[in-house]
Image 1 (cartoon, rainbow, N blue to C red):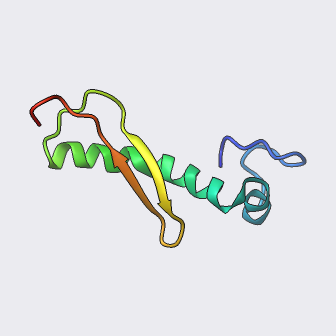
Image 2 (cartoon, rainbow, N blue to C red):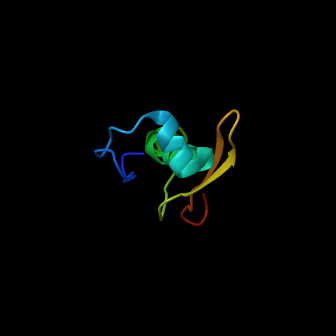
Length: 78
Protein backbone atom coordinates (compact mmCIF):
# COMPACT_ATOMS: atom_id res chain seq x y z
CA UNK A 1 0.00 0.00 0.00
CA UNK A 2 2.92 2.32 0.49
CA UNK A 3 3.48 2.32 -3.27
CA UNK A 4 -0.06 3.38 -4.15
CA UNK A 5 -0.43 6.97 -5.27
CA UNK A 6 -4.04 7.88 -4.58
CA UNK A 7 -5.14 11.25 -5.95
CA UNK A 8 -6.10 13.74 -3.24
CA UNK A 9 -3.99 12.15 -0.51
CA UNK A 10 -0.35 12.39 0.51
CA UNK A 11 1.57 9.16 0.13
CA UNK A 12 0.72 6.82 2.99
CA UNK A 13 -2.09 9.04 4.33
CA UNK A 14 -5.20 7.67 2.58
CA UNK A 15 -7.73 5.91 4.82
CA UNK A 16 -7.90 2.13 4.50
CA UNK A 17 -11.42 2.22 3.02
CA UNK A 18 -10.28 4.57 0.24
CA UNK A 19 -7.20 2.44 -0.46
CA UNK A 20 -9.37 -0.68 -0.62
CA UNK A 21 -11.74 1.00 -3.08
CA UNK A 22 -8.81 2.19 -5.21
CA UNK A 23 -6.75 -1.04 -5.23
CA UNK A 24 -9.44 -3.60 -4.47
CA UNK A 25 -9.21 -6.17 -1.69
CA UNK A 26 -7.09 -8.52 -3.79
CA UNK A 27 -4.58 -5.76 -4.53
CA UNK A 28 -4.31 -4.90 -0.85
CA UNK A 29 -3.79 -8.54 0.11
CA UNK A 30 -1.16 -9.05 -2.59
CA UNK A 31 0.70 -6.04 -1.22
CA UNK A 32 0.46 -7.39 2.33
CA UNK A 33 1.79 -10.78 1.22
CA UNK A 34 4.72 -9.09 -0.54
CA UNK A 35 5.65 -7.49 2.78
CA UNK A 36 5.21 -10.68 4.83
CA UNK A 37 6.87 -13.11 2.45
CA UNK A 38 10.52 -12.11 2.93
CA UNK A 39 10.42 -12.97 6.64
CA UNK A 40 8.67 -16.29 5.96
CA UNK A 41 11.19 -17.03 3.21
CA UNK A 42 14.19 -16.36 5.46
CA UNK A 43 12.72 -18.51 8.21
CA UNK A 44 11.99 -21.42 5.84
CA UNK A 45 15.49 -21.28 4.34
CA UNK A 46 17.09 -21.42 7.80
CA UNK A 47 14.78 -24.00 9.39
CA UNK A 48 14.81 -26.38 6.43
CA UNK A 49 18.46 -25.68 5.51
CA UNK A 50 17.50 -24.91 1.93
CA UNK A 51 19.93 -23.81 -0.76
CA UNK A 52 17.90 -21.56 -3.07
CA UNK A 53 19.27 -20.65 -6.48
CA UNK A 54 16.77 -17.90 -7.33
CA UNK A 55 14.09 -15.73 -5.80
CA UNK A 56 10.87 -17.48 -4.80
CA UNK A 57 7.66 -17.27 -6.78
CA UNK A 58 4.78 -16.11 -4.57
CA UNK A 59 1.14 -16.83 -5.39
CA UNK A 60 -1.85 -15.52 -3.42
CA UNK A 61 -4.24 -18.47 -3.08
CA UNK A 62 -7.07 -17.28 -0.82
CA UNK A 63 -8.18 -13.97 0.68
CA UNK A 64 -10.07 -15.26 3.73
CA UNK A 65 -7.97 -16.37 5.52
CA UNK A 66 -5.01 -15.02 3.61
CA UNK A 67 -3.16 -17.99 2.18
CA UNK A 68 -0.21 -17.88 -0.17
CA UNK A 69 2.16 -20.37 -1.72
CA UNK A 70 5.87 -19.80 -2.14
CA UNK A 71 7.84 -21.87 -4.64
CA UNK A 72 11.58 -21.77 -3.99
CA UNK A 73 13.94 -22.98 -6.75
CA UNK A 74 16.65 -25.16 -5.19
CA UNK A 75 20.02 -26.54 -6.17
CA UNK A 76 19.76 -29.95 -7.84
CA UNK A 77 19.84 -32.78 -5.33
CA UNK A 78 17.91 -30.98 -2.56
